[in-house]
Length: 96
Image (cartoon, rainbow, N blue to C red; front, side):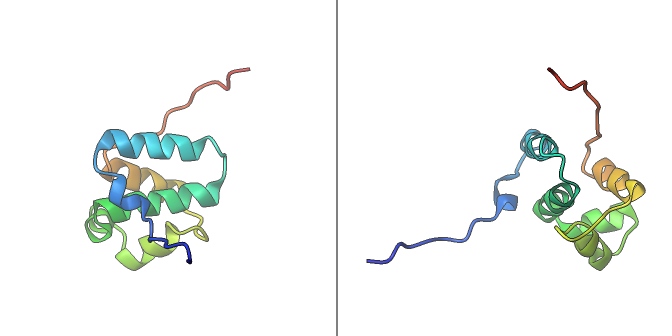
């Protein structure tokens, strides 16, 4: 009997600002820019990519490309998307 699998989409589970912040915080621990771009894309899809793009002053297509695992968002794009999402980056010292 074959194992039955189901599609999983992280965007379906990002319902609150707290969930989104926890998700992005976990992603940032990996120090992987491609993973961060992808995760921001997941969050933008969860909140509505078209609206996020419009509010950030970008085209939907541009945002899809930029916030993919192959994307490399510039800092101004990153900051504008985070602002639209009601989030901001913060810096903490690395604990030894």
